[in-house]
Amino acid sequence: MEQSPFRSLPTRVAVAVCAIPLIVWAAMVGGYFFFGLVALISGLALYEFYVLAEKKGAYPLKTLGIVAGFVVNGAFLYERLQVELYTFFERQGIRLSMFSQLQFLLVVLLCFLLLVLLVELFRSKGSPTMNAATTVFGVVMISLFFGTLISTRELFPYGFPVPKFFQTGFADEVQQATISKWGGYTIVSVLASIWICDTAAYFGGVTLGRHRLFERVSPKKSWEGAIFGFVAAVLAMLAARALVLDYLRVQDALVLGLIVGIFGQIGDLVESRFKRDAGVKDSSAIITGHGGVYDRFDSLVFVAPFVYLYIDFVVLS
Image 1 (tube, rainbow, N blue to C red):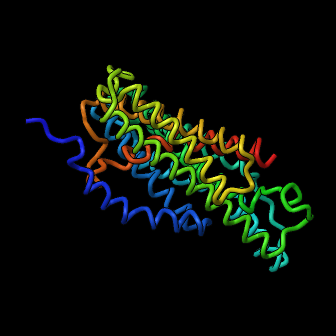
Image 2 (cartoon, one colour):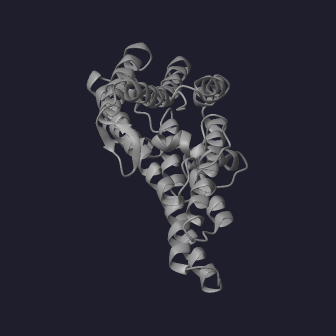
Image 3 (cartoon, rainbow, N blue to C red):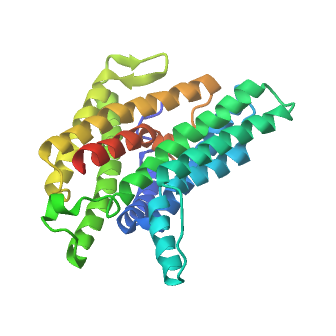
């Protein structure tokens, strides 16, 4: 007898009720708390990706990759650290010279790549080409992409063009609080639109799905579900703009909704392809009713960098 597609819904809802308040709190507070949450999610997702790669015969350098991924995540907090270190040493009468954020990130990635290649020189386990490729690819796809979510949050207030929105040279305490709230609401809105997109696609596909979207990759996904999810993502971002993101123009909210509706679903399909290749249903069973961390945040992996680029180079330029 075929089980109901809604059988796991109560468990999924219960887990979401517990996890969502923590995620929202960290997004609104920002800073080191948000960095810690994203770094944790990124590290767990990267580990799950490496386990998938192992099922295909690769032997990625898991510890090295996860440590490097953490440092890559930290690179997107670098501007905050730079300001605080400058301030501290200036009070001690010491003039500090540091890398820029981009320079630091490039140094980290280059050192990581070199270290992976050096380790594989002395390693005799599996294919060095496959091992190095999966180790580096995981850090770039997961750690680097997740890191852009931290960078998006750090644009508020770091990198925020105060004169463009407040007609003043410097933000006072009230304006700084508003900017920080915009940053938190931006992250929450993007996450909410992804979850709404996933939910709409799921229910739309279950109830109305007739035409398979990409059967070779994910047999249960349908074009009807994908369209439901796409429309829901756009509407969710437009609603967020009306409620809490008044610094956005309507066209900005529309573009962000398009990014979520398109790249979020592509991210889900990419992870489904990895899992199907590895012959597993979920990346892990760490989250009851949801599978693995990578399962739960696969859409965010592809959405985060495009959201960051659009907000930084278009909205706040």
